[in-house]
Length: 375
Image (cartoon, rainbow, N blue to C red; front, side):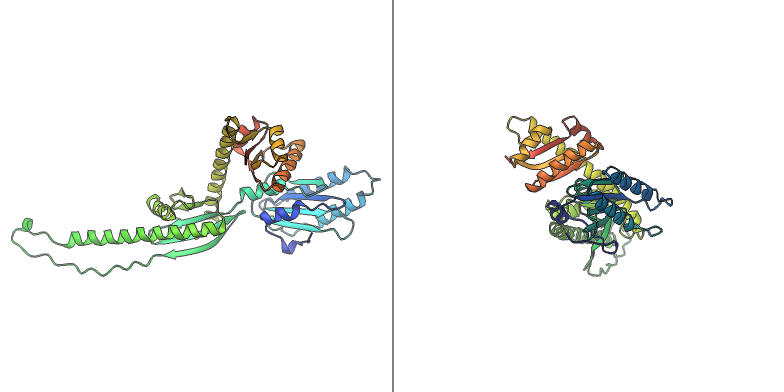
């Protein structure tokens, strides 16, 4: 396992999970999830991290041959966060081989905050919280839409980056207004000025609509290549609808807000808008997924499993296509059980979705786990 230092923090992705799944060093791995609050000047997270590391070390028998290696690993983790040096990211994740010398350490950082600081001492990496972060931070497209300009961004793991910036070039011929004829009876002569302006406006609107529809096709292409779950759009509802029509159902384009953000200079404000929408759409997706799974399990011909025993049995047989579990449980035995289920699902190429909010409450009534089945 390749080590990484603080200056070379990785950004995790699905390949990270695959690389860690079979890593099982002789003396085990300390997995560390550290939530960092930049606004906390007292850096309470440092105290909490050291307390949890000391608790793990204190649980090891003084006479056990593994203890010196564990003590050295705990010190390596503490040294990774030197005093008076602001760490990168809002959450740092470390997988550190328990070894007295030469242990491999893998460190990653994301801009997503998570709950409590966790330190887990196991024979292999504790991957479930990482999977939860990857699920909540899965990439989405973000559109800022106006009649003649569209900006496209990608949001992933709390970061937002520029992708494309399109501006319409409207080839409208100059209109020479025909002067109205003079007449002693104005009621009998209709000037061309008003109708000319109307036709110009109509042609201008038609060109704008074509521009937005063409952009919809380009957005769909980007979404396919970047594997976005959806595209969140901000702008006038009618203009966003034209982009959606242009995407032709190749990607879900959702109106996330009607605020005009096309020229918003405050990137932090846009990030807040996006994160609020991502949080909402993630919970909606999870709720729909859990309800569909329970319906499938309750149906005589449905392909669904609910509860621990039925889900475990389906995983053992390789039947699970999509595993769901309650991500809000804090009980250690439940978390260990979930981690075993997650490992089994990943090893059989099943999708895994940790669920929160209302979806977690419903799932809890059915044992906290459920699955859609392949057959």
